[in-house]
Length: 475
Image (cartoon, rainbow, N blue to C red):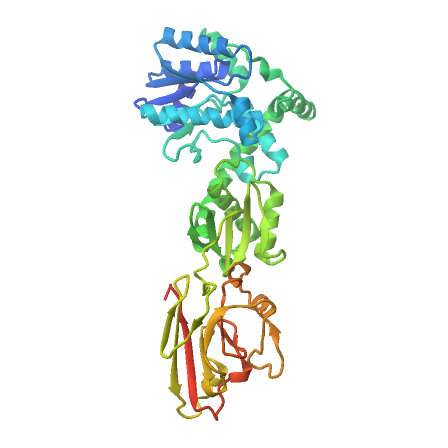
């Protein structure tokens, strides 16, 4: 850890100029104390921040140690105590995950309060190896296997204040040597040897076993991470382009994509788009396992049904020729399909009736001019031409009745259930309860977007036409 290497990492890798104010997370251990000393020695304006997690009986000792050392070096210190166990119990989190959330929330809160450009933490090369192994065991994709960058953003905590890790190029032993050489005091955290923590089991059990197969295991992993990070930059650029091609809408509770555009993407790109969508809705998700990705990809490719569960109360739905990644309790916008309230309306011609979600039903009577062959086959799905003389009594608009059937155009003498027609024409289930049906006193005469009744179709003998059409909110 020579001075030149440290300066290069701070300025080039972490993009930190010596005029930028930094908040430094300080636990009191060798990594954070060496980081604090390093930044102090290089003249960076810094504010130290120490969070007492309250998990150990000696945690107050750690806080006092950090306070005393910051006082000696003339560094401003912000401290706070939190109840990690209570927070984890309330939020159904493991201790490691809950402590991480509280720690970063505290650090970025301090950074905002003091106007810092970045938060600096003491993650080092050994942490990098352990983190990647944790992600691999949990089934993470490339985003997890590429490890931690020197600089980046944790969007769930701040989109503008960077998180920097200047020690990623150094091992735990190098950091301890730095502390010895520069007389930097630090304290040992006894929980680092507690095997109930997942990371500690990796550190003390799994990694030594892997090193028995290859003594250079850590170096091999670190070289692989460097390669994956370079590859990931290329993939991210390609994903940006594909995302823009497929994305239709992004809101707080859902993100929708053009299903056809998604299906045209190669499988790996679909997976990247899916992972980005999930991360956009749930920024706190660190590992989105491959099983959930495969479930969603099955939905995109048509293998699965119209809805699948993902993770953390998220699900994916096929609706209105879109793929929606959304929170499981969200009501998706249904302006793509006409909807009516439960009441029944009578059409008095000329008619113009506003439906419940922005659509408008228009209707008028016209005289048949010639044979008008094209009217017999119906010109568009949201427009209907009927023989008025074959319609019994008043024309009504309402919602469907249980078990209701109609006689679709071209099926003379045969009836079909509305439920089957909805399914066959891919009308989303969410829209069917208030989907409009047009009927007379005896029968259903038009199911917009699907079919008119064969019983009142236009023929060359038709004299008076009933012309109806729907106008969508999108025009």
